[in-house]
Amino acid sequence: MLDASLNDEVAWNDFLRENRRRVEVDLAEVERVIDLARRTPGLSAYDEGLQQLSIFFQVATRWYRDNAPDELPDLVDFWERYRAAVIQRFTGITTVELRAADKVVADIFTRFLQAVPNERIAYSKDATPLVYGGEGGLGGYFTHPPGLNRPFAIINLPHAAFDNVWQWLALPHETGHDIYATVEGLQTEVEEALAQRMQQAVADGEVEIPTVDVPLNTPWGAYTVQYEPEELLATIWRSWANECQADIIGVLNCGGAALAALQQIIGFEALDQWLIRPGADGAITDAPEEHPTSYVRNAFNISALRLIGQIAMADQLEARFAALRPEADSIVWFAAPSLPLVEIPTDAMIQSAEIAADVLVNQAFVSLGNQSYGDVAGFADEDQALVEAMVPRLVGGDPTFAQEPGSTARHALAATILALESDRNAGDVINRTFRHFV
Ligand SMILES: [Zn+2]
Image (cartoon, rainbow, N blue to C red; front, side, top):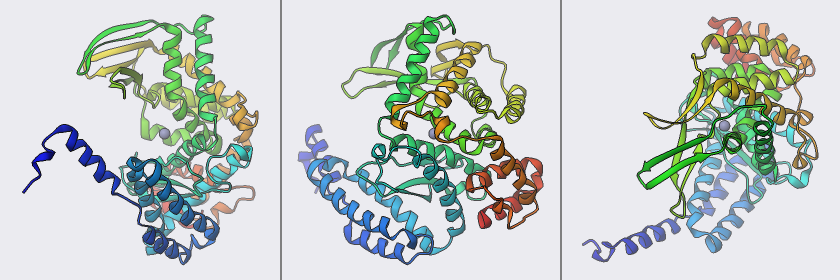
């Protein structure tokens, strides 16, 4: 017999909420998995972190149960990823791939955070980044934000990408998201810096931006999308802040190779989405899609490469951009497939991308210890030379390719995509050599 008292919206929703609260992290399982981790090559070195992890789940489980029972399923979700990171290594099926990915991510994460004052780090001090093979197709890279003093930063590398090692150049970008969430106050500062600089650029006549005033009939009622030029450009770049800074982490660690790989993933499109959504309080909100429009994102990354002095790579990537991008007088954001909403001349958006690149490479932020991204982690001609020296050795399957003095995992990763471009028939050799010998 079904319970007829549930045939009532309030009772039904209470029932669903109560069921969600019953979900918990099984602490006995946490102990078993951490015990496995201690006996797993590649993880046993993190004994202290594993000890902290066990404490983290005990404390967090109790905290969520007492303070935010509705959010317990998120903690369980998070536990699933840790478990995957451990068990995948223990079974040994993808050990080589995960070890290689761990090396890349740790190199970038540590390099950046070592230069940032410790008290601003939201993960526990000396947090270790770990990669696990997860869901999603080739684009399914994502990272789990820090919080509650987590001893490991966890990054999802889609299983689909394991055989396509140059797609791993998404890892520096994902590590960038981790860094952004890790350094307290950075998000607010970067968003504000971009917004203010864009408002100023429009006010000074440096960039010409139209107004927007479009009344809409949405599924949630009538709503008008309305922006003055200054606020429009500021809103767009504020929304793009996180993705932009993640791209900068890519460029500062791998140079032009980061964009060469990104172009494969995002393309060059000038069309985008503007999202109209109901807010929590029932009010309707609107915002551009949070990834910069591919066309503009190319221009942004090319500008950043020029600013850090990677001129030769910037020129080659710009030539590719010029050859493959669509004819587009404007960047157009759609609210629905046949409903263009915001339209800004391409030239103006490219100018704004150059300004944004300058903010992200050169502007000092208090949360980075009064340093700019470019101060914290540079990519110089010597770095590019190290990368290029590895290219023929990767193509030739040389197991010592990554032993160039002064090089680290990020150089080896950057070399993979240049190696593939130098010999597209050598894909398998490049993959194998990188994964086993990075
Ligand atoms: Zn991203």
